[in-house]
Length: 536
Image 1: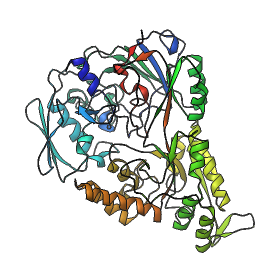
Image 2 (image 1 turned 180 degrees about the horizontal axis):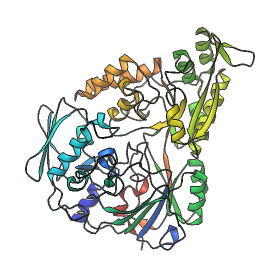
Image 3 (image 1 turned 120 degrees about the horizontal axis):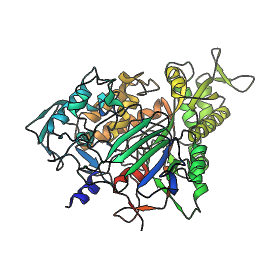
Image 4 (image 1 turned 90 degrees about the vertical axis):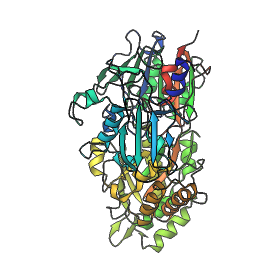
């Protein structure tokens, strides 16, 4: 296979479980910016930027990076394919040893060689408790990693972990750079060095991330030589700037994307996702911690109307983190829209309507705040629709907008319109979302959900490679969420992108992958921007 074709096959980077999005063009009208610029320059608009660019702190853990590579990558059909490794791993019969042979001749963007020592350094540093990586538990199965010479890496597991190979899309950091500084605060966190197709040239926090093509990339120099991620937090502003030509492409809510439907110079792309919108129901609140209230809200909400009106049909009702069209979804756990059933649950639990129609129990009004992220129209619309449905059941919800800096300290007691989802494996999303010991650990288990049955099932699901046992474990989790929701799942949201019709790929068109919640830097039609070429 030619080098160029190898790159096309292996640079398919999974859009992933870290908050990765990108940054805004501070001078979008300048030469080379927007749809009027040269065709070797692309400016895309998304809603947020990453907190860090270090793989050691969580960036690129799902392969969603243009600066780095993992041992493996995911192609357009979400199949594992070699990247820094020359082939998929050799796995021992007992499922406890994974051996990777590494690609020779690969260098980091500073010209230093990539070797097995960099792989060992990356994984051991992530596992070090002193490293501030919120996703460390994702590598819980890993017992040891060692180098055998410069081009072989051997991973040893504590227990058979079926999706381990998918964990090795983790971006690899250079030991000679990151290993010489404070892993949590050193300059590598904002000025990274990697093996990927692009090199970061500038990061203006809150404005833009700028990249140039890596001319020494092992897969061949990209034809798009300049790539800019513009952070435009407000959905309406992003749509306006796209229409004005300041941006070549952008992610938009379905209702705003519909305004470009008949634009002959732009194409709309819809990516199927595991991305859900959910309302956290904090255990440490007198109202949301009541199981009867949780169950009633699960029936009071009209999910299909949200899909039809808020998403313009670009999505599906959600009953948990697993989409209904996933082979891991447990049939029979769908919740009907049943206002009468919701009222019956509340009545039987002692929540009686007060003079103003809001229910009361033991002097406590059935009322609580619901926060959503400022500028996020989709979350705002979901929050308002949820509050409206709840009001009909006698539950008063006050919606409030704020930044994450405002919201995060309140998450223990206040409900949040949250998002999440990962297509890699059922363990990837459900463990961080529901495991009781992760309650209060940043954005993991935001509702501080605790259910012993769920905890046991989550451990069973990740500690075996037997498909039947795994199926049984995740069926148990999904059925437990019916009995004691902890969250009200609303919709799974398809991601909609609008792109100027000026580029193509070897496939003859731009494509999307099945996407996680995080979207931006490694998602959308630009998931493989390094493969784009200008249309003739």
